[in-house]
Image (cartoon, rainbow, N blue to C red):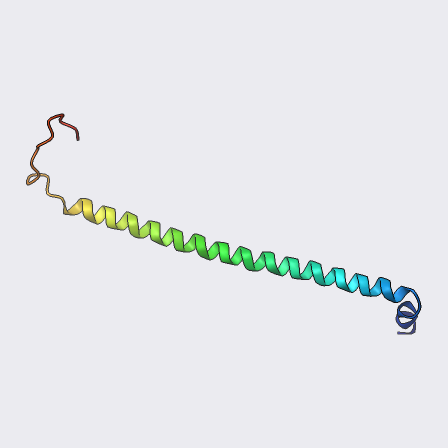
Length: 79
């Protein structure tokens, strides 16, 4: 404890304060990256769920088409 107090007293107090400040900046930066990464994962998950819903809706719509009742009125015979 005495050695720690001797570091703070005198001109070394500024170095300790600078070190604490830099450690705080690094911690804040890493926390911000972690939060942003979580937000991105949430957005990706929402987009994937919407994609699955679109695929399910398309499959349902395809299943509802009755090919026998569709008139062939395309003069170019496209499928």
